[in-house]
Length: 360
Image 1 (cartoon, rainbow, N blue to C red):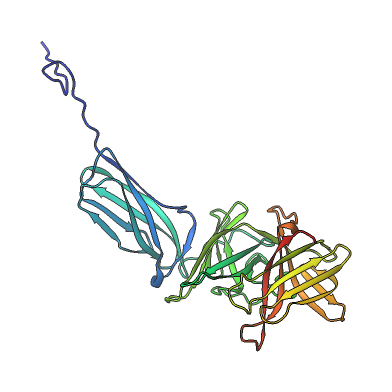
Image 2 (image 1 turned 90 degrees about the vertical axis):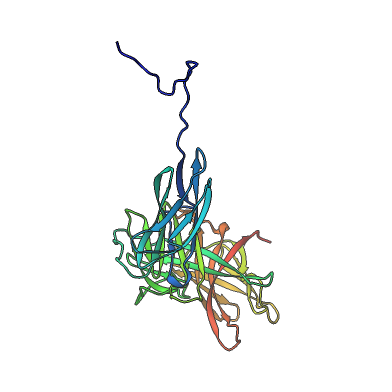
C-alpha cells in the first residue's frame, strides 16, 4: 500500500504556500546606445537602479566592468538588508567604443548583468566606414551659463558633411563649406569622419555620435586629457541646405549672440523677392548701423550683398529645411558676418542663426 504525503500539508488538511525568493533587475538610466565622449581626467558619472522584488536582499555586490572601461568605483558593496536602490559610478573608455557592464549579486537572489552606457575615447580600433553622409548638414546653438551670475551667452554652429569622408564644423564666408587637409582630432574646422551604416555610429573629428533616423546624436567636448573640459551632448535635428545660384527669398530674420557682454553684436536681415536687401547691425558698442542694396546668390550658399555705396560683401547663407530637404526659411537662416573681435583690433567670421520675424 502506497502512502502519499502532501508537500506543505498541515495537520488540519490545508497547504502552506512557499514564499517566493526575492529577485532583482538592474538598469542604467538613459539610452545606453548613445555614445559619450570620455577621458580619464573628467570621467562622466552614470547612474542606474537596482529593483528588488519580493523582499529585502543582503550582501549586495555591484561590479562595473567592460573591455576597455575604467570605472570608479569599480565595485559597490551593501551589507543590507536593503530593498531597491540607485547607484552611480564614473567611467571612461581607454580608446574606441566600449560599453560599461554591471554585474549584481546578493546572498538570496539570482545574479543579474546589464550592458550599460556606450563610451568613446580617441584611439582604439576605427569603426568601419560603410556609410556616406555627403550633403547632410545641421545647424544648432550652444548655450553656456556663467557661474555666479544670471547671464548666459550663446554660440551658433554648423556641421556639414562635405563628402564621403570629410566634414566641417563652422561656416566659411565663400559659400557652401568645402574641406581641405582634414584632421582626425580637431574640435572645429575641417575634419575626417567615419560612419558605420549598420550600427549608426559615427566619429566626426574627435567626437563620437550616432545617426538615428534623420537625427544625429553628437557628444562634443574637450578631447584633450586635461581638467579644462566641457561637454555638449545633444540630438541635432535642425537640417540646413545651401541654396543654389539664382535663388531668392522673402522675409525678415534677426538674431545673434544672447546678450552677456556689451560687445556682442545682433543682426536684422531683410531679403525681398525682387533682389533687394536691408541689414541692421547692433554692435553692442556704438550706434546701430543700417545698410541696404541688392543681393544675389552666385553659387551654392554664397550670398553677395552689394550696398548702395557699391561696397560688396560675401557671406555664407544656409536655410533651414525639413529632413527631406524642402526649404523652410520661416524656421530660420544661417548667415556669416565679419565682425570686430572682443579686443577691437581684428575681425573674426561668425556664423549666426537668424530666426524668422514677421515682415513689418
